[in-house]
Each structure stands twice: as C-alpha cells, then as structure tokens.
Length: 577
Image (cartoon, rainbow, N blue to C red):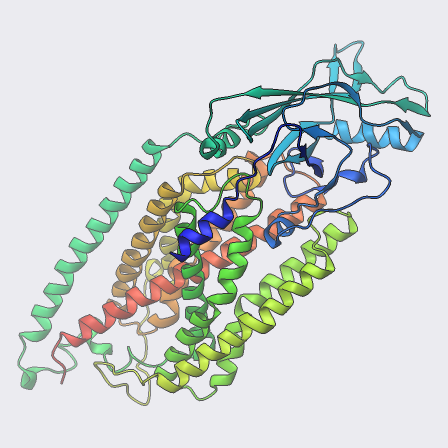
C-alpha cells in the first residue's frame, strides 16, 4: 500500500484548461560532450527577466546539477504563437565573444516545460574548403516549439528552426538583437501514461539502447559454464579429500600422512589481523549491496523515469542514510564474534570507511566546480542538508546498529580450535600467490559485466537513456554468482597449498574487480568518449575511483561470506584428531 501511495505521489499529473499559463523554466547550459560540465542558463548573454526567480528544487535535482529559473517565454495551453519577440538586447564585444566561444565548444541549453526537458544547441559552426579555409559561427535567433497534447495534458515538446541562423563573425559590437519564438500546439492520441516513452526516444541525445540480448546471452552462457565447471570439479576434489582424510584410522595418522588443507586445521580459523577494519569492510559492503538491490528494485517498479530529474541520486542518498543501520549491525556482530574489545573504534571506522573517501573526492570535485562557477557545485544549503542527514540519521543509525551487534552478537563457534603459535607457511609457486589470485579473481567477475559496463558508462557519460533495468538485474545476479564461485575455488587452492591466511585474501582477490573497473574507466575516457577539460576530467576520475571502491567493497563482501561458509563446511565434515 505504501509503495502504491509513493508511486502515485511521484506521478502527479498536471492538467490545463484552454488558455491556462504553462510555465517555462530555463535550466542549464554546457558542452555537449561534457555531461558534468554545466552552468546556469543565465551565465550566458541571453534574454533574462529583471528579477531572476528560481524554482524550488528537490534534493535529487540539485545533486543532478539542475538550477531552474523562470523565463520570459509566455506559453498558454492550446494557444499558438507566431513570431513573438522574446526581448530586445544589445551585446557588447565581450558578450559576442562569449557566445562565439560557447557555440564553438558545442554548447547546448536545456529548458523545462511541464517537467519535460527541451534541449537545443545555441548555434553551429560551418567550416568549408581547405585552401582557402572558411570558418563561420552561426547563432540561432528563432525557436519554434512543437507541443503535443492529449485533451488537457502535455505529452511531448520539441524544438525546430524555421529561420536561418545569424552569423556573428562579421558583426561589429555593440550588436542589437531581438530573439523570437513561435509555439504550435499539436493534438495527439498518445496517452499520458506513455509519455515517458516519447521522452526516452528524444532525438537530441542518442536513442535509448535496443535490448542487447545477444551480448547478455553470451555472457550468461559463459558464466554458467564457468560456474558449472567450478562447482563440478571442486565438488569432486573435495569429496575425494573427504574420502582420503576420513578413511584413515586416527591411531595410524602422523605428520607424514596428513597434508593439504587438513594439516592447517589448527590455524585456518585464526582471527585475522586488523579485525576492526576487516569487519568494517564487510559491514559497509553489506550496506552497499543492499543499496544496489534497493535502487534496482525501485527502478523495476518504474519509480525512475526520464522526466523525473535526479530521482536516482535522491534515492541513493536516502537509502545510504537508512541502511547505515545494517553496516553498523553487521560490522559489530562480526567483531563481537571475533571477540574484539574496541567496539567503539569499530563503529567509527565503519561509519568513515566509505564516507571519508567519498567526502575527500567530493571536496576536490566541488571545489573545482565552484571555481568554474558550474552548477555541479552544490549550494551551501544543500551541503548543510546532506551533513545534517548524515549527522542526524546516518551516523546515529550506524551507532545503533553497532550497539545492537555488540549486545546480541555471539563468539564464533569454529569446527577447529587454533593453536597459540601459527604454523609456518611453505614456499608456494608464483601462480598461487596473492597477486596471481587477485588477477584471476578480478578478471573473471569483470568479464561477466564488461559488456553491460559499456552501456552503463554510455548512460552516465555519453547521455544515453538507460531503462533496461531487468537486464541489469540479471547481470548483477551473474556477477555475484561468478564472484562467489571464483572465491570458493581460489580459497580451496590456497588452503590446499597449506596457506592458512585466507581471511583477508578472500576479500581482495575478487574485490580486485574494482581495479579492473577503474582501468576500464580510463580506457573509456581516452578511447570511447569525447570528454575534455579539467572540470570534466576531475569529475570523471573522481566517480571512476568511487565506482572501483564500491565494487571492491561489495564483491569483496560476497567473496568473503562464500569462502567463510565453504571453509566451515569442509572442516566440519572431516574427522580431526
């Protein structure tokens, strides 16, 4: 019931009477190929009201870089407009130069009509010939709006150009201009409930991805083959080990007959060093996995759409604050199970493990965006709101979860006891070292998501509109399955080499997938995108590092729990002295 109410609130329908005023907001401008380099619309020399009135925005819209303000456009529902003068303006030499540079950098602008984003370019550049070479910059001075409506609701808005552009190369400042616009209202049979499909097919940005079933089926087949191979081979090996270890008479056993993973049974459950950080990683990893599943679930319910600005960002922030309880609970429960005593320190490490790096990267990004006067720089009141959300919700919930875990947690009951002194680890070949295992454990899960990762990056950085959340959920299940199976296999090979230090390695072997994500991000930036400039580069690198870090924490957590239950299983099912 609550979900239905929330869905209804998020899908408010605006109805208009004939002749009613339709508010048009200006939003932002920026280079077409730099999606995170955006500026306020009125930062350019354009028509503006004498007093700029900003629209109240949601948290998600502000995080998305939106800065909507009222415009001079006068739209009335169902009333056509012909050659209406927007304003009279005189451009100085500096303003003409600013417009010319913006057009050469392929600037676009965004208006918002009835929550529908309307985008167009400021102008275009024409280059002809080689010798002699001509370079002309043109500015669009007339906009024609086509507004499609069904009864009393607006369905879609787009812009066209009925008149030719004005060349601004040969103009001598000061330049007098009178930008104009026209509005044509066109009836359509498209239902309001299908409006989001029209927005997804907007031709200004590349079209929404077609369903890439072939790539997904290919990845799924490879994953199933890999998982099946690991499970079948590993089960046969483990059964053979059980038979060999259990068939011997305890009176006949000595150090020469015991070898492999059984001989280290007195060390395999030795509590890892830096248990504080170890448990904090697992707590935050569970939190991030829960956030991912929550956002995926909300997306599949249809709570996110193209015209709902910043809904994913706002949902992510709220989910992070609420799920802080899970991070504290899991971390403190595991720490209590390891009989740790510095539980207050464990809670503080848990709450700062992700928040600290995130704040550091965001501070650099926000400072540079502020120097560039970009809308990506968060206002002071938004920063204060996020800080209060963390101080009043996120951190207290982490502490509450930590207290609950500390009080109700129980020490681990391992199948084997640990000796006071650890066993010496024999020399192992290079292909069984932690570096080799990290490469294998990172590459295999990455191969399962590499195809989908391209589409995700094209959504975030290439202005595509991603709506295939069902496929994304399938890919998530595939990568989690691969991570668990690879982790179990690598842990077994490590224990078979009589190396009992599996706790930390179980995290960073498959958690190293985050390194592959960062490397792929750099590859995408250099070879697959047209992004440039300091602001966009800092934004990209910052988010790429965070994506790799989140991948490390999430997959590392899945990897550990898979290895933990596997190790408990094999040692609980073999006879000990």
